[in-house]
Image (cartoon, rainbow, N blue to C red):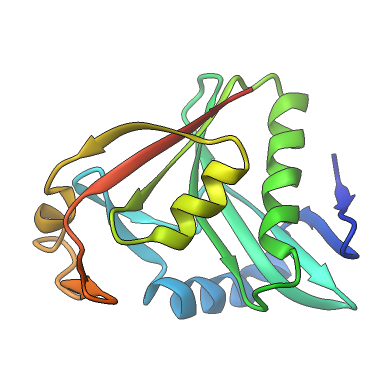
Length: 166
């Protein structure tokens, strides 16, 4: 599937080489870096593959993901540079459709315990909490000391693994 258009006139397409600067900037703005500490390792969040959302000719979001040769894809990052435009939903819809087309049976991702907006976003779109990796973020700070200790008064300590069965 090359492009997908949502009701909010956000078009999503597979990323191309010319999108790399936008992807790097969007991830750095959203997460502080393109490198993420997750699963007790440093991971390049640009991933194996990416899709870009556009609205009125401007890039407004990116989703990155990787596959390990199984029927499972891991979402590494989702960043909307213009929140409220529907870019996040359109990107996730595109990835779900692409995964089904590729006969993938499961999408999964990791977020953190304080990221209530992400928990709400993904659960409203059918993702389910699979497990809690207690103190995973505390360990991750050894790899990436720039991870904040708290956000909005909530200590950042645990990774939450969410999945969507397709």
